[in-house]
Amino acid sequence: MNKAKRAAVIAGNWKMNKTPAETTALINDLKPLVADAACGVICCVPFTDIPAAVDAAKGSNIKIGAQNCHWAESGAFTGEIAASWLKELGVEYCVLGHSERRQYFGETDETVNSRTKAALAAGLKPIICVGELKEERLADKTHEVLDVQVKGAFADIAAAELANIIIAYEPVWAIGTGLTATDDQADEACGYIRSLIAGLYGQDAADAMTIQYGGSMNAGNAEALLAKENVDGGLIGGASLSAEKFQPIVAAASK
Ligand code: PGA
Image (cartoon, rainbow, N blue to C red; front, side, top):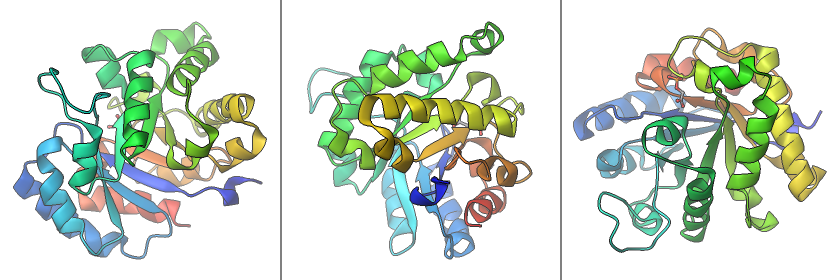
C-alpha cells in the first residue's frame, strides 16, 4: 500500500459563500474542532474573505486557500487577481480549474495550465480540479476526459513542483447534487489519474501525489471514500460551510 506515503488533505471550497464577518465566525468555530487533525485542513475562501480568514486562522493548523488566480503578474485583466498578491496576504493554496469555472467562466485546460504555473511561481500550492460530465461518464469517456485534463494542466510543469500540487477528482455530476460517486468509482478514477501522473513523471512521483475526491462528500460517506487506496482526501463544497458538518470529514481523514 502506498497510501501511507501521501498526506491526507481535507479542503473546504466555500465557493461564493460567507461574508468577511461570517468567515471569522466559521474559522473560529472550526479551530478547536480540528486542532488535533492528523490530516491537512484547508479553507478555500472568496477573495474578499482572505484577510479575515488568514487573521482568524493565525496560530492554528488551518491553512487558507483562494479559489482562482490569474496567470499574469499584473495588467489589463479587469476583475482578475494575481497569484503573488494572494501569497502576500498569507494564502497558501489555490483551487484551479474547478468545473464551475470551466462551465461558467470559460476556463480551459490551457488557462488552467497557465494559472498553475503562475501559482507555483508565486509560491502557492495549486489544487487542480479535473472530472467528467455525466454525459461523458455515460458514454464511457471518463478516462479520455481525465487524460486530456491532466495532461493539459501539467504541460511543462517540472517534476520538482509536484510536491506542491494537489489534484482533486471531481465528477461534475456529483458536485452539489447530493449524488456521490461510489467508493469504487472514486477509487478507480483517482487511480487512473495516478497512472497518468506515473506516465508523465514516474511511479514514485505518482505514489507521493495527494489526489482528493470531491462531489457531495459529507459526514456520512467520507469514511468509506477516504478508506480507498487512491483517495487521499476531499475537496468539500456544501459540507464545508458549517463547522459541525466539516469536522466529521476531517475526523474521518485523520483515522
Ligand atoms: P460539493 O462541492 O461538496 O457541494 O458537491 C464540491 C466542490 O465543488 O468542490
